[in-house]
Length: 239
Image (cartoon, rainbow, N blue to C red; front, side):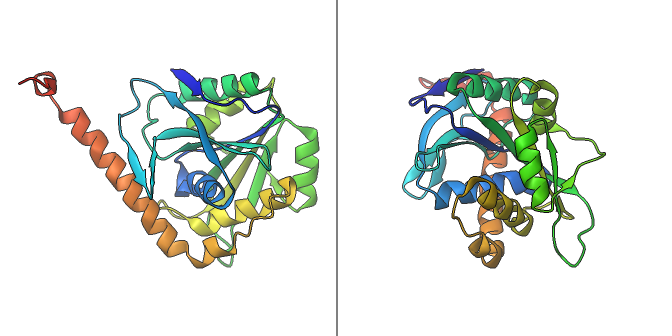
């Protein structure tokens, strides 16, 4: 696995969101990328990541891309799909990114299955960074006391003892994209990082945003399956 960077910002905060329960991490990062003045500064390459180019307006996006918001000095690691089976390697590459940029901290966004009370998503925190934990707890976040964390987030949790790392978990009761829970994550990140970003449009346009993400996931999944079905003899460009 290779980390390819075109820029190397100094001392940023890294925020990562990967496909997980309710896709809350992916949705939250996608929303922040779209609403802050970000630019792509690199990507993560691995032969096991499907060669899929996602068309996003005038831009062409990779499945695993790195974005930068210079005003806020934030680096986002954004993934739509294509990481199944390489979670350990991806987590190691994120830690490599943190080391390369001398990052202040890593913030991971994830969902956790739980019945929602009054339709509202509670946010839980797990952190090895006292400053972050203190500030988030002041906002009313509950400490995650038990549960199993899987995927890239779980791997990062096990490997990031030497890096300031904070993990935020949004309650979600659905398996499909949950923009409302993602908006709750953004609400607390906005206070913690001073983003001045309003999550209300995400709540109001939840259905539209979720359908957009569903389409992106459907396209990437279909493309991955088609790639798996291709036989070696079908790859000859010369016939």
